[in-house]
Image (cartoon, rainbow over all chains, first blue to last red; front, side):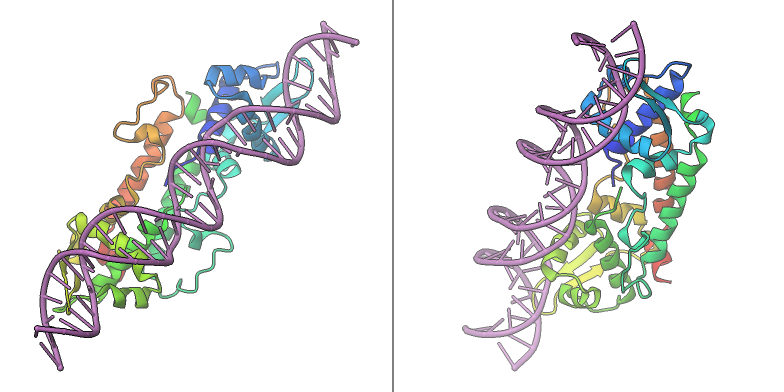
Length: 132
Length: 132
DNA sequence: TTGAATTCCTACCATTTTAGTAGTATAATA
DNA sequence: TATTATACTACTAAAATGGTAGGAATTCAA
């Protein structure tokens, strides 16, 4: 029941971008150095964030990344879902997570409740909450 | 961020024992049949529950398992911790989980908060809540 | 007293996931 | 045109997951 490095690093990248935001694009090299994470691994993670539409990017000499929106507009839950996948604690709660025991299972509603408190928490926090 | 089969099956075993409680010991064979889980795998899981002191056991012909306490005395959190290990969403929150970035890390308190809501939820529910 | 039913214990193993590394192509600019 | 950056894809070692398998010890019933 652990968040993987994908989700943890993604949060650190996003906070780094939020803190160092400005006119210029911020290169992965700089983020990697500040965060002490391999630039090559961060590439893959930031690619997920980019595909989710969270970033504005520029290639080439002065290229890099910027947040596409203001920090307060990013729910942490959305950042984690984009990188970790869904946050459901069990497969029976996922989109197509069918379990034929669902109706007789005495644990189902407990897991549903756990899923709810997790979702509620991660969606109540924004990137702005983290950086201040 | 998924609960493994160890924790999920453990909950089902405990609810099964709670529902079918009585004078007699309940054999793993019966539980395995009712829950449609391999008896050999359940052996390992119930061994964890036994070592945690949750069960009373009897070997031999009419042997099996019984709950050691009343259903309402088992916090679900304790059952999960005995089988899943700790429930912390990140390693920086675990007992000896040292991270030298802890003081500067902008995500630490977010993870701490997530850990808190999870703990609060799983410790607020008992086995009795599941079976009624 | 012996055989069947049960828990108890440990070793093994295939598959999947995790956490990266590596190489190369593409783009922009000084 | 060399340099600096993103973008994309393939590969891989190590760990975790989800079991299987075998046998020892214990108890009771016939």
